Length: 231
Image 1 (cartoon, rainbow, N blue to C red):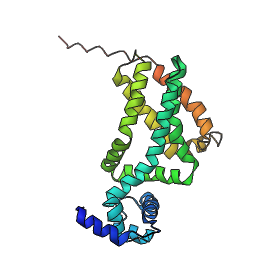
Image 2: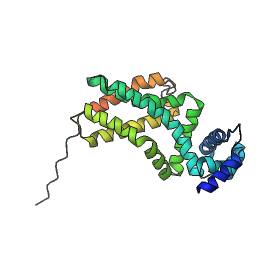
Image 3: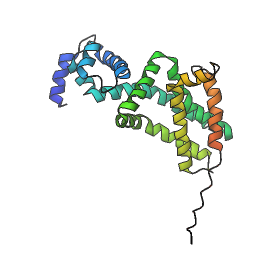
Image 4: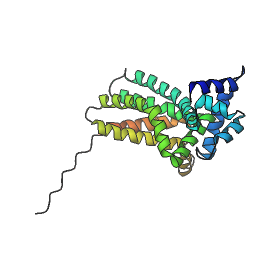
C-alpha cells in the first residue's frame, strides 16, 4: 500500500482505545478454522470482528497477511521454547543428549493440545492442509525452516554414523508423529479402549521420546546392490 494512502487509512481507523487488531486476529483464526481460508471473505471477517475493512488493510495489508499473522503469533512462542530447550540439550552428552533434543522439539508442540486456542490452531492447520497446501507450505517455511534446520544440525552432530539425508528422513517422520498425535488423538483413545490418552502430554512424552530416540539411533540402511543385467 502506498505510504500516503496508508497514512489516510491509519487516520481513519485508529482510535485511543483501539483493539481492532486483536479482534481481527481472534476472529480470523476462529473463522478460518471453522470454514477454511477460502470460505471467508474479508468483508465477513470485518463484520464478525466488528471492525471496518480499512482497518484490516492497515494492520495486515490483505487476507493472506492476516492469516500469516495468525500463524506467526502461535509459532513464535513455540519456536522460542524449542530453541531454549535445544540449548539446554546440547549441554548433555551421549544418548541423553539425543533424547533431550527430541523432547525439546516435541514438548512445545504438544502443549497446544492443552488449551482451546491451541486446539483451534491445530484445526486451522488441518483445514489449510486439505484446502490450500501451497499456502500452508509457505507459512510453514516462513515460520519453521530456520529452527528445524537448527535441530537437524544438532542431530547430525550427535549421529555421525548417519548421513544428513538419513537424519532428514527421520526428522520428517518425527514431524508426522507430532502432527498426527495432535490432530488425530481420538483414534488411539478409541482402539486402546481409553487406556491411551493423548491429551495427557506427560504420558505422550514418556512414550514418544524414547521411541523416537531409538528410531534416530537405528543404523542406516545398507545401500541396495545394483541388480545385474541379464546376459
